[in-house]
Figure 1: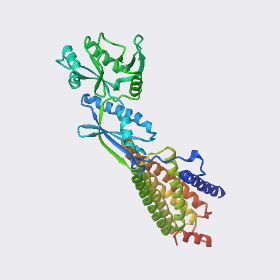
Figure 2: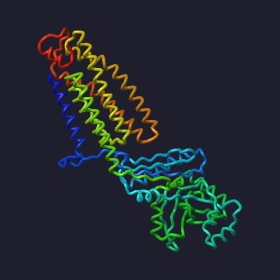
Figure 3: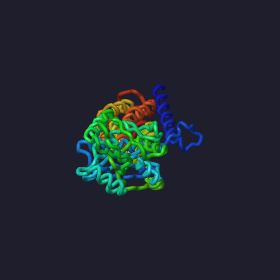
Figure 4: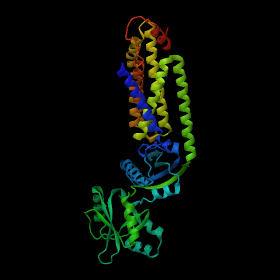
Amino acid sequence: MWRTRILAVLFLLIGLLAGYFDAANFFSFSPEFLKRSFSLGPDLQGGISLEYKADTSQLPSSEVSEAMAGLRDVIERRVNIFGVSEPIIQAKKRGEENRLIVELAGVFNIEEAIQVIGETPYLEFRVLAPGMTLEELARRQSENDLLAVLDAFSPTSLTGRFLQKASLDFDQTTLEPNVLLDFNDEGQKIFAELTRDNVGKPLAIFLDGLPISVPIVREEISQGSAQISGRFTREEAVTLVRRLNSGALPVAITLLKQETRGAYLGADTLWRMLRAGLYGTIAVAIFLVLFYRLPGLLAIAALLIYTALALAIFKLVPVYLSAAGIAGFILSIGMAVDANILIFERTKEELRQGKSLAAAVEEGFSRAWLSIRDSNVSSLITALILFWLAPTRSVSGFALTLSIGVLLSMFSAITVTRTFLRALELSAGGGPASGGKEKIMRILYGAR
């Protein structure tokens, strides 16, 4: 019996420590390593949302999904400059258009965000358009007719998504800075084909839609390296190398929509949800006490421990908490209460059959366990499938918080509540109820 009581006290201490960790940021005396923040989405702490259109018109349909995945990875590296732990970057299909959604929680300088994301260069190689001659190209270049020069070239399949590394080099004669481009294996094959098919012709290098170098191909280049030279100061070349190495966009993007959600609006949404959760928990606590009396009180204690542990896990992992994620957590609280109700109802049935309180409690837990297990396992399977196939980070956050909540709710109902009930030193007899203590406990259990 003392071992059970020690275990009950240990559960209470764990709950108190977890609760302190959850609220450590509100205490000035808390150690710095405990002062972690929850990972909240822009819908709860405010932030910005940007929507871009990706130009995949020049890509074969079989390469579009790969290009969009590469685009998402590149943009994610770019937004890391803001220190956002959980940026939401999604590739979506809107009709025939490919879109990229970028959400940055806690970032409110939308101009800076647009500049940083848009700073990533779109690098591509172009060849002379069909019917275009070198003489006509030279004439257009001499007239400084930019649009005419652009029309003189046609896109190829060689773009920045095949770039492996950019590096700075200097001409040994003129000491002018050059930018060297090294391609991956697939890029090397494409580059070799382009140089082989265009010997004696220009192979223009375009950056962000503008020609920055128009070298003439003298021979096939099979080693997979290109050089951009002749138009840079040292500072410009260093900047270009940095931008290319940070990730050249595999496809061009155009900003379509921008939205800022203020910190106040996000905080207001968060507090509304927390108040709703608090009111719901208080209502459930009143219900448990009125209908189940002493077991209801113990279930409330177990529920508080469950809540503290769940929030501590969300803070440690950290789990991305959007409005949907918090909704999943609140839903799991209801499931934890549901498990306790099943146990208490089974216990009441055993008491009505004349069993002693200790025997009724043990029988109630053992008989309710099968129903609790089956319902929670089915919920876990659904949540895992939802997490695996989630189209957005918010949906996966909902599935993750629900899964963690379901697992903890089973622990709370089966282990914590049971330990608290056993700690009351119930008689282990299996016969009809007798004795003053037994009668009092049966009344506290809501049984006659």
